Length: 120
Image (cartoon, rainbow, N blue to C red; front, side, top):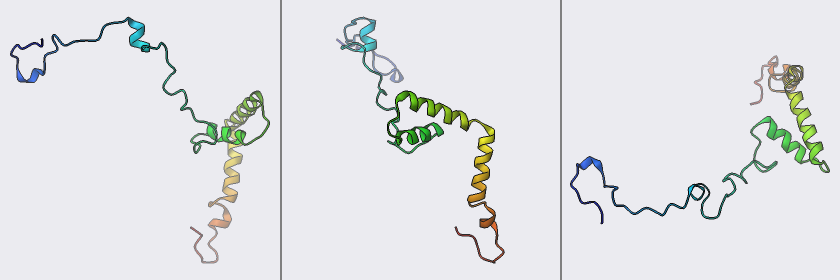
């Protein structure tokens, strides 16, 4: 029988005499009735070529996924070496210089001597 004592309006409903489930031990409350389950995000890790890459690691993984006949060890070794190379400042300087030479900031793109605007 629920508690019928009078109370103030802001207290809300009484929690006395409310039926609760039977306690079956701490493991049941943690793992559920069927024992330990897999983590909820077990299948949600990004697979190569499944979604657009967001990081350099994703770009490297996607590139290696396109290469046929690489064992897991070879794939891991190449990935580690490429990522190590990406941390090298001289390599990054070479990349930026190459991008400047070919990209929208190149001398050809910036040169307005003909009086025309660059392509947008």
